[in-house]
Amino acid sequence: MTDWPSLLKIGIALLAIVNPVGSVPVFISATSGWSNAERSKTAKTAAFTVFIVLTIAAFVGDQVLNFFGVSIPSFQVGGGILLMLIAISMMHAKQSGAHQTPEEMQSLADKEVIAIVPLSIPLLAGPGAISNMIIAAQQNSSVAGHISLLIPIFFVCLIILLVLTLAVAIANKLGTIGINIVTRIMGLILAAMAVEFIARGLNGLFPKLFV
Image 1: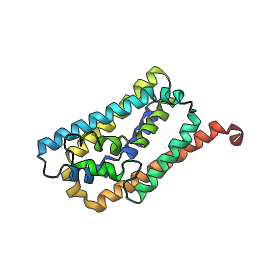
Image 2 (image 1 turned 45 degrees about the vertical axis):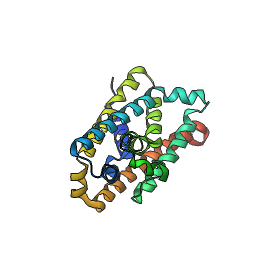
Image 3 (image 1 turned 135 degrees about the vertical axis):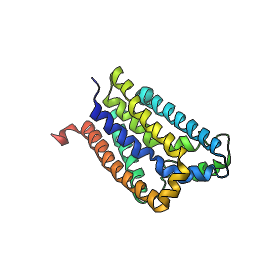
Image 4 (image 1 turned 60 degrees about the vertical axis):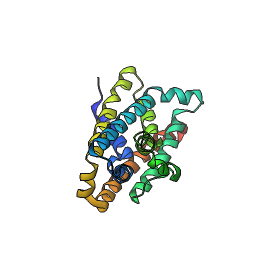
C-alpha cells in the first residue's frame, strides 16, 4: 500500500533542496540572448536529466554505499549535515557551494552542455538531492517502495520544467527580493528536514542514547 504522507514529505524535502525558483537567475543568465524555443528545449533537457539522476540515486544509491562500506545511519548523519549547510546558505539567500563551484559557473558559456552541466548537475540534482533520495530509498526499501519514489521525483521534475520554462516571467514578477524570500522559506523547511535526518542517523549509531 502506497504511503502517500511519506511520499508527500519526501517530495517537499526534495523540492526544497532542488529549489527551482532559486535557479531562475542562473538559468536566465546562462541562456541570455537565446530564443524561447532554445530556452524551452534547455528546460526540458534539464528536467529530464534531473529525473534520470535522482531515479538512479533512488534505485542503486544504497548499493553504492554498500560497496564503500558506509552504513545507512552514518550516511544519514553525513547527508543531514550536508543538507543543513545548504539550508543555512539558502536562508542567507546564497547559492550553496555544495551545488556548484566557481569553475562550474564559468562553464555556463558552453551552450551545448548548459542543460546538463551545471544546470542539472550539480545546480538542481546536486549532492543534497542525491543524498535525500538515497536516504528515502532506505526508508522505502521494498521494490514497491523504490518504485513509489518515482512519484515525487516526477512531480518535482515537472515543477522544474514549468519554472524554467516560465523563468523570464517569474523573474519579472518576483524580482530579486521575491526570489530571495522563496529561497529563505525553502531553506527553513530544508533545515528542519536536515535535523530529522541527523537525529535518525544518531539514533542508529548510538541507540542507547535515545532509550
